[in-house]
Image (cartoon, rainbow, N blue to C red; front, side, top):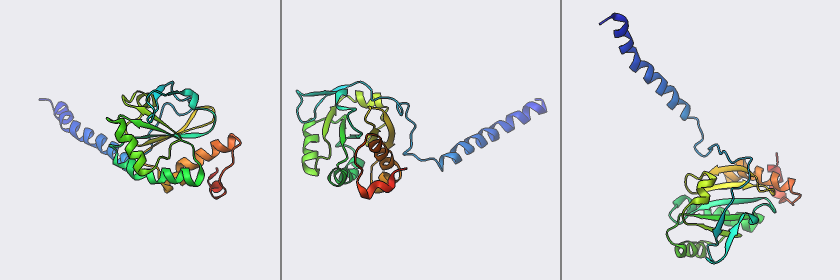
Length: 196
């Protein structure tokens, strides 16, 4: 075997190892809650889904676009959704944040309704996405995920993971309040410092 071929065979694993190391090293500083979404800057996809509480009532895109809002993807099988639920109730109670709930792939409508009855319901409208089609159109990986939507129905931001006070102050809240300001709506005084 020629010495050049032998050297190439010996160096190939080293080069592959170095390339993999660089890739993994970059991942140490990436934010797992920040996933690019092709829908940011676009309108919410067309949908028609039943109401969680009233199966004979359906909702479509007409519920989007009159004011800034959050679309929160949640499920009873999701422990992180349980953890964020208290904060969502707080957003509704303290700041009247308009939230549409998207119940994602729950096996039982009854279990989802009981969950909200037990923990409180922070949602103005609850959509039942049993098959996950709207979630799929939104590019949802799992629950919870939250989308900030402006008064024109355009998705401004996507957050993967639970909402809590830190995430609200640093990421989601400023975008939501900016959309509110652009819509001419009043912003709670204690949140005005979040405006860019």
